[in-house]
Length: 145
Image 1 (cartoon, rainbow, N blue to C red):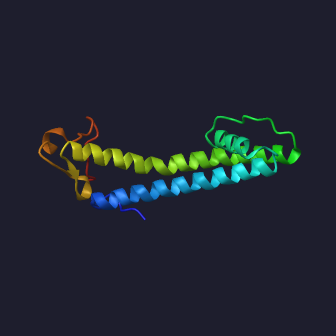
Image 2: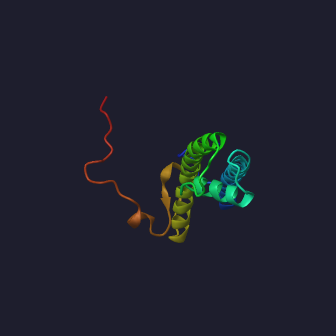
Image 3: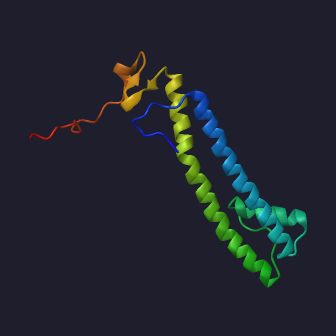
């Protein structure tokens, strides 16, 4: 799905298309989760639609429940929805990290007039002077045959 680290970077249009696709997928997961939570709190927790939406939003956002739940079915739903919400939050956050990190690196590189070509070679006016250097003691050593 993604290019290898030794491959050239994607063109800006393809990169931003990928960013929009990832954002759309994350938004869809959150919307479906919010819908399921609202429905569950309304039906099983016997809350009004607005209160069910508020509880589902607060749980999904990691803030905690707002209204007390009286029924056993509602309490079981609230417990499982809270566990599900924690897992979904971590999944969406972890899935977005590499994409966000790549976006920051691409924006920073283009702002500074740099680009990274194949095999991690820096190109640009300041590339020779400003390219990241390895710390002392980490030089590449070839094994002797």
